[in-house]
Amino acid sequence: MPALTFENISKKFGDNTVIDAFSAEIHDGEFLVLLGPSGCGKSTLLRMIAGLSDITSGDLLFDGSVANDWEPKQRGVAFVFQTYALYPHMTVRENIAFPLIMDAFRKWYHLPIVNIVARHRLMKRADIAERTLSIARQLELEPLLDRRPASLSGGQRQRVALARALVRNPALYLLDEPLSNLDAKLRTQMRSEISALHHKVGKTFVYVTHDQVEAMTMATRIIVMNKGIVQQVDTPDEIYDRPANTFVARFVGSPPMNLIPASVRNNALQLSGKLAVEHAAPLPPRRELTFGVRPEKLTLHPAAEGRLPAQVAVVERLGAETVIGCRLMTGEENKDQRLLEHDLVFVRVSGNPKVKIGELCSLDYQADDVLWFDIDNGDRIFPDQE
Image (cartoon, rainbow, N blue to C red):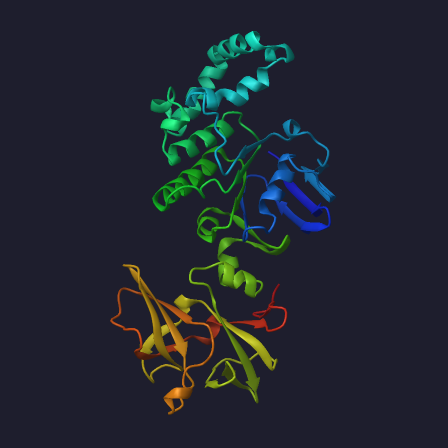
């Protein structure tokens, strides 16, 4: 099973740079997720690993060997596409066995009549039939082997696509947003199945998604990308708890991290330029910065009991928890001047607190839960990046 190394990989389409000097390492046997918004270069990078797209500059190494010019077949990878890419005229059994049949194909098998006879004979070959049946059982597809894709549900089609990738026993699995066409219930089910599959086969998985829930629940490590540039490479916990910059802080988490413009004057903290806050811990030695805190790290209190006066603007009841969006206030007596012009500040609380839109409240936090970011470039400045 290969370890992959990217050394200053770049990809251009004409004058348009899609991936710019990408460097990272994928360890043997890990589940690595490429996470980022649409158009950030995730799928292009996956296609370069598979050998389906050329590399403009830089080197891609498989176990230390430069693989830039290797043919796709030489790389020992399996690719699961977003759109399943199943053959509609073939049964599930034939779709799963197709990679094995193509591995055994000879040039003359492509002749019209010979093609049909050769495929039927190969389908009955003991090793191919046994391997196909084994993978079908593993993914609970055995009852569906004689059906065609048109009669399958979305989740069943996705399992067939996975089975076709597994049947060759490749060294590396590449998955390009395989769950994006499924409904919410099926996505949850397939996330669990793919994670269980990774633990079972012990191979390297590289998974592309723009869904941070998929990344957080499945990955051993995540590479967060934006506009073809790596923003952070780390474990899901580290990326959530210690985002490298404000892009990662906003992109990972639902609701995202609260980011509020802040200023320090004479060792006193002001949020949004108007709200003076008593902050127990030492403040960063900067005049202008960004105050960041996760919604679950904020606590909700009645009016005047917390350090951040606020007014309820949004209430999202989710059963076991409630997400409340608030607008911060200056605390001034003139109500026309109270609401600060800033994005909503979200707080996540357990259960169903009896709050209403328009109600006055207050928020509070622990100083150790606050992250500080550079207000110009967005990089985290405290706690310091290692």
